[in-house]
Image (cartoon, rainbow, N blue to C red):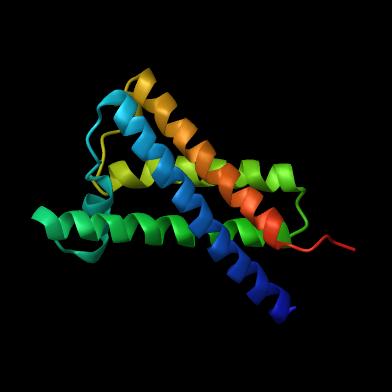
Amino acid sequence: MLEELGCAIGKGLLSGLAGTAAITGAQRIEMRLTGRQPSSTPEKAGGAVLGVEPTNEAGKRFGTMVHWFYGTVWGIPLGLLRLSGLRKCMANAVHFLAIWLTGMILLPALKASSAPWKWGVKALAIDGLLHIVYAAASGLFHEWISPPRK
């Protein structure tokens, strides 16, 4: 049981890393298409949690580290959902909803973002699509590294 739990966490972390790479690439494409500047939300949220105020280039690097850490760690719930026996599609859907809704609640609570109902339909749709990319990539990677169940 402990070995299965460790494997689930490890696969989850690797899957979260893959999902973070995918959402990062998708964000870069979206920023080129829309002209949006990089978000300061990760450094604001990380700063609020750790009680620091990152600024300038150091703040951008800090935000990048927070982004990759947060996305990688969010893979753990996927590994645990898959371990629980939940069907793959359902586990991926729950994973997506957990990530997206947590961000919508947590980021405004940390004063790192405005409330989602103030974003506008376009921004909300883009955010949802980006998180679908994350969840899909995480789920596909998890499937790729997992042997078939017997």
